[in-house]
Amino acid sequence: MDPLEEMPVVVNCVLTRERDPGKNDVIPVQTLNLFYAKRPSDKEYLTISDAVVKVSGASQIYDFTWDGERWTSTFLPEFGAEYSLEVSLPDGNRLSARTVVPMKMSLSGTPVYSGRTCTSSAKYYSIQPSGEAFIWITGMEDRPEISHFCTNHPGTDDSNIINNIWQDLPIAKSVRDNYNIILNSYYEPADKDYWMKFGRQCLDLPVHKDYLRIHHYASFDNGISEPLIQKLRYGSGDEAPVNSTMAEGFVLAADLIDAVPPPPGSIGLLTGYLLPIRTYFLSGEYDLYLSKIIERGFHKDELAAMYSMDQNYTNIEGGLGIFGAMYYSDYVN
Figure (cartoon, rainbow, N blue to C red):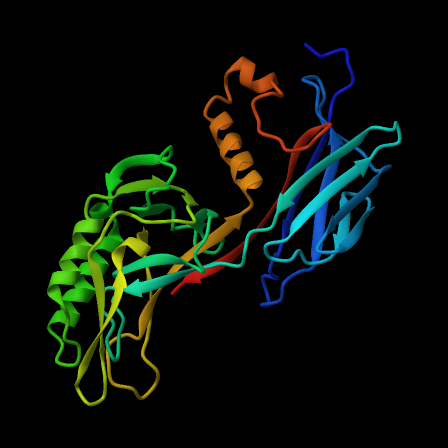
């Protein structure tokens, strides 16, 4: 079954702003893998160590060098910048590709009710600043118990939905119990009407297994026109309503939440909750590439899928593979 012609060259390079696990520093090293596609009879990929590899962008040109295992270069890609890849092979063939690093964004939580000493875990999340984004949400590496996610975002990929709904998850009981405490607290008056609006958005949400994939549109509107009111309690006891819009956010829930205790010596319940998830922001090319990889995995046992080189998305001109970009952040407030 081996093809007689020479196998195509594969380039895998994802520009990142990876963080050092032991620190908060960003690692300024980019890596690239360059090899020939594997024939059915091959046991290993044949790497390519003799080439000229360059990435240009943000008015700079970066050379990649072979370190004995892969190609590396030292630089940090800039948010929102376009980068071009060029690979020149000894036989004269050239490969090229382009990608755009996602804009600097984050998930920001809007509580249904916010009080002086605690924040309800009942939150809508929005993208800050707003704009188109390709988002993948998973559990954090040190939190393997987090593997279920729920959202009402209309741009969600539903291919990994399982036969459960939000109220089946342990987090649903935690949210309800916490809010019942708030409702009965002298220090924390609450707006029951808006709690119920949040609850109606949550109860029947489908559960996604292992990850969430979301295409967030620049003109995002989830169709909910009702206002979402935060009531902030001041020291004088006065309450000031602050208006925002439900249409600007979406529900996001995972298997569990991490409670943040109040500062030492303070009076109160909890100062807030952190959602222990990892949020990836991907370039459009990398988002499509990963989704096709997963889709192909559904058919991994089919003979045509095993040996086809046409079923994966690629943006490499003159070869196969991916040139993309991404960054991630851990926890969501």
